[in-house]
Image (cartoon, rainbow, N blue to C red; front, top):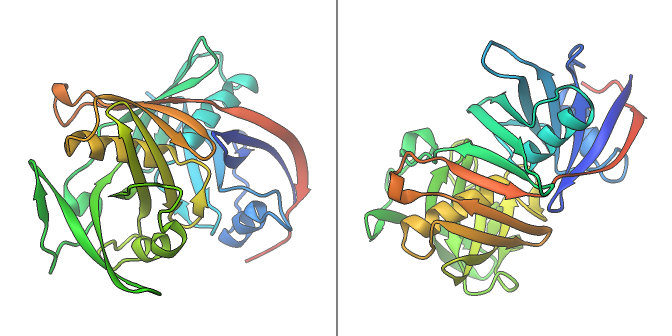
Length: 294
């Protein structure tokens, strides 16, 4: 089967975008893995599918598959590329669109300066909805919100990671570090991702606070490994930093692939929406023969 695609990136987080508005391709997990493969396929952190609106009130359905072929709930950097794609391809003339994701709905807007703003909706703190299994865990209170000690069996011995847990439509664990350049992302990332407290696995964020309005971040993404940027990870890290008293309500986050601006007005309550602003660019377009894989 020959498939047309567009390669895009947002702050270095790269995607293969598929137009399924005129019919579903019916790809298998193995075929998504093939497309994401950087040696034999196109190469990407995630595969984004643009599908018709499933019901009135939204403009499109936005479906995300990780590089491992598994479908996930949300991707913030991908959402910015999504709205850039549908606008540039003439699938809509709107500068703001609403899309359906598996975790709910999102509003995506093209800004006059060329960047893209995504209304990510409110963060989720209820443990069963993240989901996070706290059985047997003893939280460490910090203000009115706990951090959770995760025991990690690392090559250097048993270590403890103090993480804040929340969902931005997908699960996140945020760990504060002194310096992201020396943080044990490669060693601790997969251990946190697959920790038994997270029944659906988790994205692991390593947050360095520079000052109350600036932070640095690295994210080991569930099903993808470390990426150059993670939009929902940046949102989760800033929300955690605000709730724990480390950050103000608007923060510039430097990731290895670029800068994202995250705003969360906690002064309006825990149910306030998180807004993320950042770049979204097309890299190239093409066609590829996708083998018949189960």
